[in-house]
Length: 170
Image 1 (cartoon, rainbow, N blue to C red):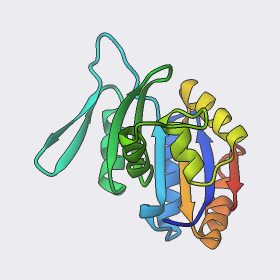
Image 2 (image 1 turned 90 degrees about the vertical axis):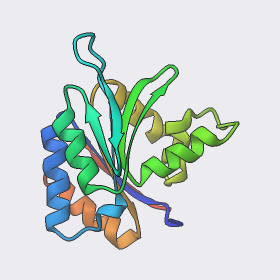
Image 3 (image 1 turned 135 degrees about the vertical axis):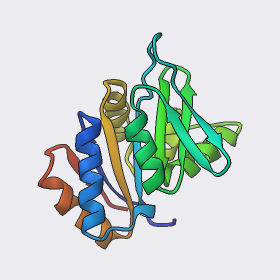
């Protein structure tokens, strides 16, 4: 996707992120433009990870319902462990960017692979730092990436649900 327009909203719970995703779907936004990024929490009593059985990917852990539902709605899902960051669970368009970043030898620009992926979506450096801190604090990012009109529409839908929403236009 060559467009570098994004709307990023931050949620404190999986339920509120899932509700926001539902609102976007009801309003007719293309789910192929949506990504979710959050921590894949580790707990000694609960294993965490993704596994596959044929063509379906499943999440295993305390957030099973949330990540499994996202994988059904969005195009793809992934689970990464990033040095200095910890576990990261993602779904949607950003998965391709993360995989491409993992495969490149040099991430560059002072970014980790998540930062590089967000930057390639048109998110400015200062905001990337804020978004990474939000994820580390256990928050969930919902990202709409695409044409200006779609991103603006997403902002208007999401702004009524949270005050933690921003638009980044190229």
